[in-house]
Length: 284
Image 1: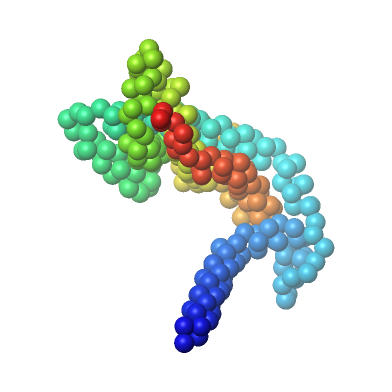
Image 2 (image 1 turned 60 degrees about the vertical axis):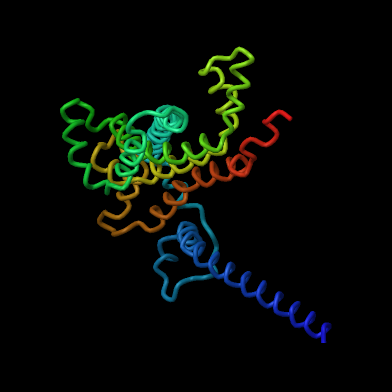
């Protein structure tokens, strides 16, 4: 009887594991299908894109990528996106990380209210603050500049950075900083040389989320930029017009080129996300 129960239990575990893997495989296919479809369209000619019935087997071509990369406005938009995203991520981290450290380490009146007020700012729909931002930047003479877009992205990235990093600072043992103070380090030196290296996984996670927000945004960039300062998402809208209709090959090729840097950065930073927060840092 016990042997039958063992066999039945083992068979049940195998069936359960198989169903779990099948469900995960189905979800993976569902999530990757749009990306694969876009990649396939980017490797087709215009005639192949509009072929009826759709072509599932064809000779791939890089013509669309060559056409997109030869456009001067694409190179300019790529540089604008790179500068805007880098500036927004850097400014958000430079302001948000010290703010999160202060909220986590220093008790002061109104600390909880300030923290939740920052979260409330993140919950606002972007369209609700777009017009006030545009009026403000117009008064300051910053309209159609890359700096105005950086400030707009920082407004929404900053609460996210504070929310993520506060948890990392609270989980970090205070004894690490106290040991550095005993050894003669100032609070600033202990923060830079002891605390920041230990919260690197949090910094990487916050950087990736801020980068995705700044790199993929269309709304703020469309309103706050012009032809010289527009970013890649705004440029992609140019492929939807024209006398010949939507240029699906150019639009999908530019879309692949847009998402490629974020994917590369995410994979390159993946090992830091799973690194131990303070493994081996506490003295025995």
